[in-house]
Length: 448
Ligand code: NDP
Image (cartoon, rainbow, N blue to C red):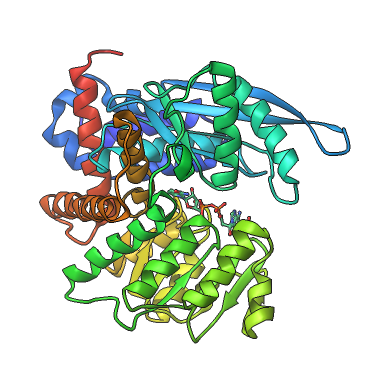
């Protein structure tokens, strides 16, 4: 049977089994659509039904998370963990706390994570979890009580050699601390069961910076393939959380000018650039005072685009670093019309299929999330290694490893794309390079 027919049949079955899970179906379709050439070359993948197996999570849990607010009122949220694929190592992937969290979103993130972790070259399987809990507007004590209740159930399923969660949207250093404390209390174990820990108790230098730095390193590799550099490039960045903050920091270091940030209420546009001093204000605003990005516009007297994303701002490079599907077909058309020639995804699946089609058609430099933002999980992998060895590497050592990993990820994706005749198509390259290692490992391990 022709490869494309097999892919269509597998996708039809996925649609039937996962009805209504739009984000998951979007992520599966994007990967399957890249795999035709690989199936032609490897009939053993077809015989062993690797595609049918790889789209089905190995295991998933959903649980009740009851907690009390500061006034004593009882709330109930829903907790999840999707353990997607352990062919390459323990399940690894973040926890997201956001009101939009549901099974579809976590399955899409877990599925992407499998291929992303494979690209890092480190021994990590893929998983993802979280809750529809919204940390926004909650006191530290409320967040702590929620995290303790969440971990009381989650701790049955995870462990340093089984499943090692980390942060994602709404889960930063504060939440990882509360989650770790409860795991330790219930299990009576001080182990590397979570990454993104603080430095005093097992964290790694550069982990907070890793996703943003890694995304800019990846973009730099894309620029080099066309003989360009960041010098003087105008860059738009969306989001103002962990990934966006360190994307701006690294862009500044490499001589680019980052001119925007956003949150779910709106965007700021600073044509003079978000320099290190202004960025320090953002870090305090977002990580300590937990305020809204509008305060940046008030403080520095720049434009605030209420309710808008930053894609209407003229730029050379765009770094979507907030959430999924934040660049639609119209946004992509605007970016391209305004001369944008590079999109590097700090966020997971921030571009819709209509946007991606335009990047590929116009052959701009496009770094899909599973490759471009893999620096976060790669550095989590480095945190796990340091925990196992019970030692800590210096900032320079971790940064150098991160940089080399991002260079290697770009090389794998670029070379795979070139091998299959589409050198500028890193979507195809990243999907193929990530898939082959997982598929071969699944074959090695038998029908499990
Ligand atoms: P944070 O919670 O630190 O920040 C998220 C930012 O995105 C906030 O500014 C938030 O605004 C904004 N945002 C979230 N949801 C929406 C939405 N629905 N619409 C508009 N804006 C939104 O998360 P991270 O920076 O850690 O994560 C950002 C993205 O990067 C996610 O896609 C995540 O999966 C991805 N990622 C993160 C990694 C990491 O190491 N942290 C690793 C790899 C990928 P507001 O405060 O208003 O909600």
